[in-house]
Length: 178
Ligand code: PRP
Ligand code: HPA
Image 1 (tube, rainbow, N blue to C red):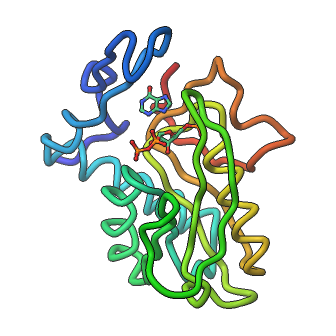
Image 2 (cartoon, rainbow, N blue to C red; image 1 turned 180 degrees about the vertical axis):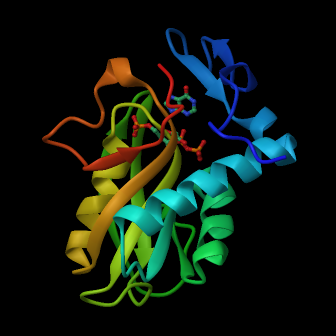
């Protein structure tokens, strides 16, 4: 039976002081283990993109947990999937941008030929905290002259205000939690 409103919040576990003191870490592993919950999430992503991002040509997924949801969505939409990885993981000519996240620093990298100028993309990740990662990826897309139609996340940590007007235009799904 198809679920109406996505997943149960209790399926997202929280661990205190991981990966460092003061961080409450939301763990998405139980969602992936539950095929109905995962299907419900991909259904909602698909519906949302079909409604609000017409003409999307690529799904861009973020290292590492965006890789778990991105290809499933891309297949539903019958479009390609592109990886944005942490620095040093991709072969060949790359473009990159540095950023800060809730608990550290990182650099996002893409293969130069992965997206073409003018291509319409949606970006997907598991979770929005400060928005640093998604914002950096939008900058990377700008650098490659791609057009970001929207960003998708499973969980938004609303208190951190990562989706504020100065950052990404993040399209957040109905079950987003704090
Ligand atoms: C986490 C999460 C997001 C990002 C969110 O990934 O999966 O990508 O942080 O934080 P932000 O909104 O403050 O930027 P992380 O960089 O820990 O990488 P991982 O998926 O490889 O563990
Ligand atoms: N869970 C997973 N990734 C994260 C979190 C979290 O709570 N906060 C920042 N990145």
